[in-house]
Length: 119
Image (cartoon, rainbow, N blue to C red):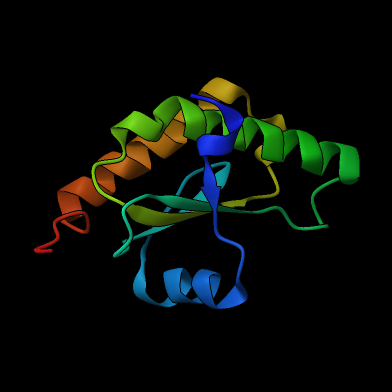
């Protein structure tokens, strides 16, 4: 999968919609929100606070999170919006930690039925 195939959430109202209407899952390193969308593709948003390290650390985290999403993009069942928020311990995490956290969240969201849409 190439870098261009990850679609991103860019507008504040899209992020707010996911925070209000979506379900969340917390782990040691991440808080993940997800909700189905009516588009033909999934969109992703990343949030890394300035409280988490300097710019170098934040940018590395964003690169690792994008790579995690690329690795798991085929496991996302239906088009949905996903927002990932890095927690303070996130700089200690590895790519495998992030992949496992996201995979666990996706399984939980499937079990809760938020990916079941009647479109």
